[in-house]
Length: 335
Ligand SMILES: NC(=O)c1ccc[n+]([C@@H]2O[C@H](COP(=O)([O-])OP(=O)(O)OC[C@H]3O[C@@H](n4cnc5c(N)ncnc54)[C@H](OP(=O)(O)O)[C@@H]3O)[C@@H](O)[C@H]2O)c1
Image 1 (cartoon, rainbow, N blue to C red):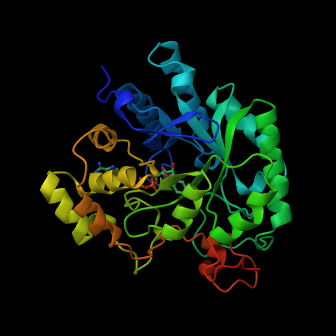
Image 2: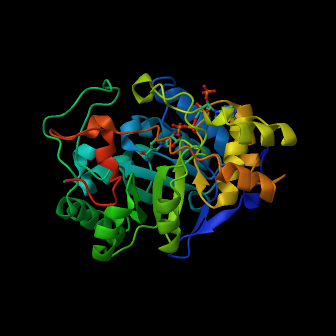
């Protein structure tokens, strides 16, 4: 099969090092719905279709299967290593052994280096994958600058060792970034954060852009297949927002694809998940043709509902009032 989308037509972002990162990636969190083989097979087909950015994480429990397909596709000569941009993330229970955790991901992914390695969550608070929404770990603690910086120093060491090209943060707030950025020897190249039309995080988005940190948007379609534990009655479906539906009708597109067009044109890097070929091709292709109008962009900017989907309640510590405590809503770090 030839590439469905020419990767050179997908807009890219220049990181602070001068390296380029593709402007659309493929998510690999299969949630409770798709097993590791299904996800890794989708990675293989998506690369064949023109994807070059693959968003991985140890906690998705599929890096070894993805490693096998990365190795296969490179040995087939479809892509060279330097054409791919692969991310991974250290999970919360390994903040004190980041180098070991990264080496495990490198081993599983069968790579010599990772392009961008994230601290997945800014807390060392562990919960087992697929645990229920009300489970809590009694060892959980609120954010600590010292603890986070200890983790970050190890990430910086990974860059020094040549094991990763860039390091990044994820699930941060402006207050936490303000506290840690001045202490970083190597700045984060990117910030992975929840971003979709009903949750635009304008302040954090602007903050990252201003600091030359590229915003990567997760759940860019509003994660319609997210697990039950991440659903509440108040959640808004992005694909049903009137502004999204109007643009979808005007462009004769699925509303999911309009969410992605908005993301690309706003300036973030969406990493939509899909294992279905027609979906993942249109998710990449949409960045290369038929842009939304200025008026449509304006309308969607007005569709923000401050609707956070991934609330993170399983990371709460004893004495915390609710999931809002993870997100420093009053602008100061919640202790
Ligand atoms: N850093 C973090 O803490 C963090 C947190 C969450 C996610 N992530 C990353 O972000 C990625 C994306 O987030 P996500 O998977 O939660 O949500 P998402 O990308 O917003 O939604 C994915 C779902 O949308 C549907 N979809 C995809 N393309 C479509 C299309 N063209 N038309 C119609 N429906 C379409 C599919 O549902 P069906 O399969 O039902 O068709 C798919 O499973 C993850 O895979 C992961 O890599 C990172």
